[in-house]
Length: 346
Image (cartoon, rainbow, N blue to C red):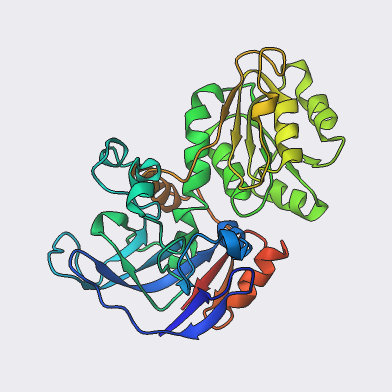
C-alpha cells in the first residue's frame, strides 16, 4: 500500500510503498478515507536529528477517518464497514484521566511510551492504518470524510480550548483570536456560533484577515507592532474577555497578554516557542487573568464536535489532495499557503 512517511529528520516526507498492516489482538484495521495534515506534522518534520523522538520510518497523519476493514481477535464492540473518526491522543485507558475520557492528559502515557498515530506510531496518511483499541474510534455516520478528518484535531483542539471560557463569553464581551489558519478559523466559527461575543481576529496578512471575516470575525487587526494598541482601540479599557493564541510564538503571546482584560482568559494553543510565565504576576497584567495551555481534547468532546458538524455549526475550510499529491500538501503547509486545512484522500 502507499503511505506518506518521515524517513529522515529535517527532510521532506516521502510517498512510499509499504506492507499493508494486519490487526493484532484488540486492534482494528481501518481503510482510510481521509487524513488531515497539521502544523504539528511540520513541527515534527523539522525536529533536529539529535532530538528526534520517534522511530523511523513513520507514517504521518494524526487526523484520520476511515471505514473498519478488519478487527483483531477479541474485538466485538465495532463492526466491519462502520465509518469512524480516530480519537488521536491515545492513553493507557485506566488512569484517572483516561477513565474520564481525557486520554489527552493520560498520566501514564509517557512512562508506557504510548504515542498518538502519526506522532510516534504509524498514522493515517496511508491507504490503511492500525488503531490500537476500538475505544479510540468514534462513529461518524454519513458525514463527509473530507470534512470530518480535520475535526479530530483542528476541530477538537479549538473546542477544548474555548469550552472552559464559554461561561465568561456573554453579551457585551470580546474574544480575540490570534492566527486565522487551520485551527484559528475553526476557533472563530465556534466562537461565532456558541457565544454572543464580539470577535476580533489577528493575522499577519490581509488575505488571512479577509478569510477571518468570511468565517465570522467581527473585526480584524494586523498582527504587528501596533496590534495591542489597535485591539485596545476596539475594546477600550475593558480589554478582551478571552484571548485564544493559535500561534504561540513570543510576539503573539505578548499581544495576548497585552490585550486581555480583568478576569480574562489567555489560552495558548499554538506550538510556538513563546513563554507567558515571565509575564504573569500581580503587576504584570490585569487582576485575575487566567493563563492556560491546553492539549487536544477528550473523547467526549470529539463526539460533541462531530455532532456540531452534523448540525451545521462547523464547516471546516479544506483543500483536498490525493495521496499521490500528499507531499505537496506538506510543502504548502510549510509555506503557509493553505486556506484552512489540507486533507489527503487515498
